[in-house]
Amino acid sequence: MINLKYALFWVLPLVSAGTWLGQYFLCKPRHDRGLTPHPGMLLAMFITWEVEGSPQYVSMESGQNIAYISDIGAQGLKPLFIAGCCVTTIFLDLSFAAERWLRHTGRLAKNMGTAEKVLSGLSIVFAIAGTCGLILLSIFDTVQHPRLHDGFLLLFIAGYVISAIFICAEYQRLGVHFRQHRILRASFWMKLFFIIIEIFLAAVFIGTSFSKGNKNVAAIFEWVIAIIFTFYVFTFFVDLLPASRDHQKDANLELGHVDGPANERHSHGYAATNGAHGFDGAADIAYSQRPKPPMAQNY
Image 1 (cartoon, rainbow, N blue to C red):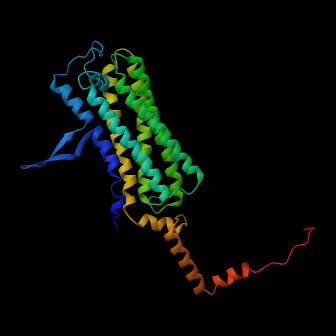
Image 2: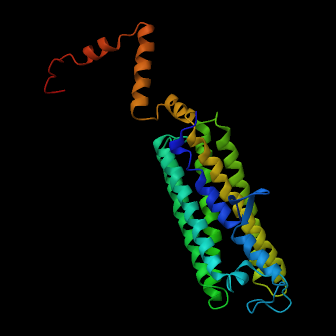
């Protein structure tokens, strides 16, 4: 059964991914063709650059025909670049926080130990570091602050890749206790794919970006990295969607990790089951509360 109270949490990563790449779910109705898709930040920047005739910006080297995202974002679309980066990362961080809270309350597969909570906390910390990197690189553009821009770019990539490593480790441990949840396994493999691909692409991007004559190759890899990041954001939609269903609460209940009235009902059911097998819970409690003889002082 769908619980509308928790149904809107999975909208957070959709807003983040839509702002970053394309807002296909935030569309104006059209009378002739239904809904009109609105491009997100990346599509808007690329389309603008193409429509303007693929101009050669001052931040581009001679012989460079493909613009970096940062080259376009340092020009007239800088307000869009800053706003898009802020909205994308803020809603992504809210997705991290929502996932942590929903696991804590038992709406998602609950953390079974301290190690999983630590891994979740570390993933949030490094995600915030990646957020700072992306927002700051959009503010300190590649034209006026090239060194700061490159440093914040590395912080953005490293922050989210390390965050994904920690969240993968958390999901691997969760999968041991919740083997029946295929969605955990699917999310784990999607995030692991993101880690492997992004590390490889980032290595190629850094190697070509800081060498002369390879700027076009580096620009292509930067666009590919940004697009794959969209699919990583979308994996949190997969993570948060089960929170709107009540069966996860029952799974946590079976493991004895749900507090409150549901757990009390579970305890009553357990006592009734034991009573059916000849165990008298009230008698056991009464026996345990009987006064015990005083122990000798030398014990």
